[in-house]
Image (cartoon, rainbow, N blue to C red):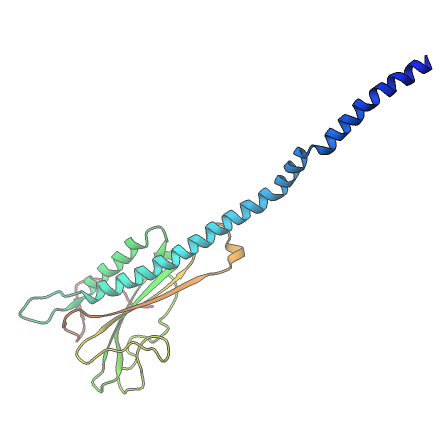
Length: 224
């Protein structure tokens, strides 16, 4: 009986050895384990790429909004052929309405601010921020000067980065726009940290206008 058992085990040994060899060559479990480790990383990279794309899109949109606002403000010409066109608070409000429409989806009113300045020449030939209007609840001020800056003298060089200031010619005005926007991340706010997007744009007015003041009607969008 012992001999028979030994012979039985001996005959079964090659089969067991073959099964072990097949198990050694089987990598299906290894692939599953590798995927278990890789999937979270792939998801993280995918959402990270989506966040960066959204941030780039937000920068582009803010830049385009600034350009459109400055362009629209430069085209304002309310009046008749008997007098110089006037700029009214109502016209400025309409420019800001266009900003809100163009910024649809960005929640711009709550998280952004647009500052529209009329850069002109003062009576002494210097640069002067004659008036300034703002829209948006974000607390932010102009980086280049407040309303009334440069009213007298010639020390104020204009608006824009130092050495590359935008200036207004005599008898005309430049509509200078600054936008400050707090980026609202999709999912990676703690990773990105606070992101503030800033953009500027400037257009010279398209035709002569009454530069003496901003007229009514309309709500005065003061910069608090």
